[in-house]
Length: 457
Image 1 (cartoon, rainbow, N blue to C red):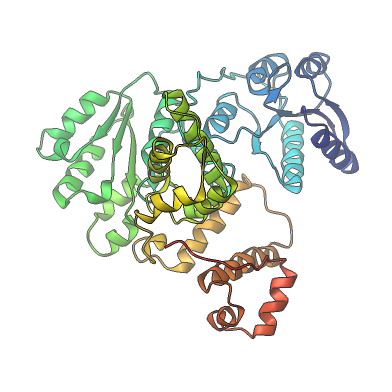
Image 2: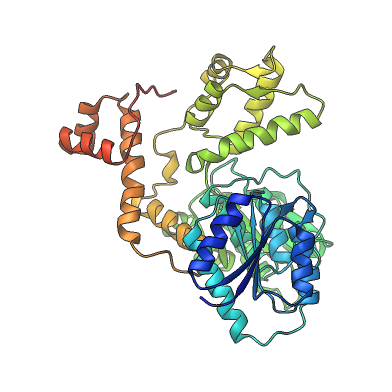
């Protein structure tokens, strides 16, 4: 890797780590904690690549991107941020950042992206940039998450936002599918035009689809839970889509049902399935991103406070229980539970016992629900691996992937199996079909903490 890289971050540790890694890779590095200093270096013509944090002591790195593009057209900027929301990813895309990485980031991954940026700059002929200033962002959408699954989703949303491709958004009830659709519309070039959410009533008559198109103008049309529509409604949608011209509304659809399975069983039209699935966005359940639960809880406590409700927080023990629960209603259920606890709790801190009472009156998840409508385990694994590759944005993961993936799967498998048998290693070994001594060795090798475990059912 060859070039001069400008690093701007208010965290001294990150500046040191990046400086050392990039210098070892053969680059010259100028590092600063000041956005003003970074902009001065850019104006002086220094640097072949910028790596910048968003929240700096003297400004916002994202807001500086249009000015950097104006001063130095073609200078790539990689944005790194601890503000792990969909809005940050969208802002970075709108400001035409070369790439966006959430904190904490994988250093080898960042190095590969930096090498790619330098190579692209070397090959490209700098041209005037049409970088747009970031839109006014609404921070009241609970689309937050720092887990790889959510960051991958944010990236895909930012990429498809201003394309004309139809978008199919899948996921369980309460995961935020409609919020994703609204975010795609609200932050796209069509934001000033209508977003029409189609109901069953809109498709009851032959004239219904024409009315929908008339109301949408050149904005967006959203078919909410399209998998629930009957055959006649599906046929009307197909005829509607076939009537579109070059200047037609953007089409989006949501579904918690597995449309491919419904198509194979004859319950969903094949021609409609392929017309809707230009890009498929899979919204993960809370069970697939438990590390985001404390972040979401913090958001919902803050939202309730802004709504005039008492300011509350979970004790550490309550947080552990909230993370362990299955959340069949996903984000929507989490918010409703938190609002109920805010009202019923007499103290500022909500205890584990209070959470147990509320969750004990709610249904736990059915054993097979996590896999979708008969989805095989291999299909679920396939989705996660594709998300992992998507997370790298076209850059191949670092070598040694096979063993790394096996280790990543083996650890959670053993931990979940231990949870299922209440920590009994003999039962766990029998469940996994391995020797008890082998299980003990793997527990030690993988540094799995064995404690008395109890499932909340």
